[in-house]
Image (cartoon, rainbow, N blue to C red; front, side, top):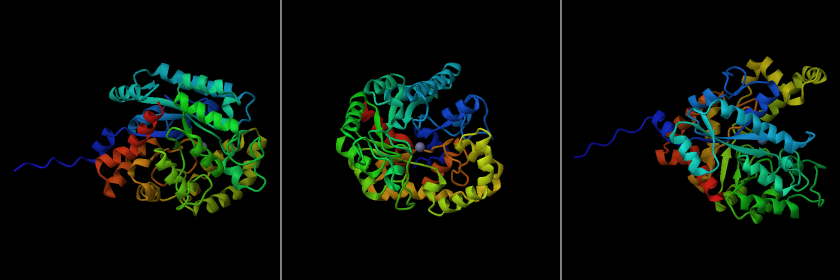
Length: 380
Ligand SMILES: [Zn+2]
């Protein structure tokens, strides 16, 4: 008779999986506030380098953001990348920039955080295909075609769903001919097309144009929480058919359909304070952040239940299978992660919840990162 091997603990399953998070805004956060990611930022941010390691994170796509309002978005992107490079130079034993999945696996084997870059909002490329290549050379491996606002060549979810929202330069919703060239160029280079923030028409134009698997780097399920930033069932099915992956966003407002209304009431209640903060020079995001920090206990009550986040993951598994879902937290880009999931040290809660729901080690390792690594490889 043979002895059955001891089942692995949650801790072992979590440590042995390659944990990939495809969206974290800490770079912009630290740049604007003069923080350093390699300092202990506990109580100030949702992420820093040591806490990422504590949470068992192996691979981070650092978000490089622009809404196109900067005087020179391409230069702004390069500054954000410079700040990441500086962190890497200071901490060669903890973090390394990787160019492909082979280098990524080497980094993980050396217990270092593998760093890649995702550009959020196509404004950075300033309508110039050569700038995509230049950004690729600096480590960019995905580009979200839009942010909340549209580009000249792709319309966003926000614009497509609001009355009198902006159209593309052809006066329509979706990708322009130039937008399709951008998708082609990204396919050639091995820069993954990200449809998070993109409008539905842009989404379907991307699906029709791309030759490689795509991602939604930080979006959740519309059927559970009908927010324009989330994906409808037919979109999730199309991503699965394309071999891509949906990386679930932690933002409570995208997870729990009751949050948006309660959050809006919270913001309205303190609008006079937000207004004065803006008058004193803070940007709208910073002004709101100050309110969320000041009224921390009240903000806490707005958060989605943690298990509801796992419901989003499970919904995709039931709809299309376990190969098409992953994690795109949006940490340090959101004020309200779900209850208990306060910062990057709490990632193991997800592994624990998946074990409790009966998923095995192989399935869990796909969700935590394996699926995203497949898409990265397919784009190389
Ligand atoms: Zn975003």
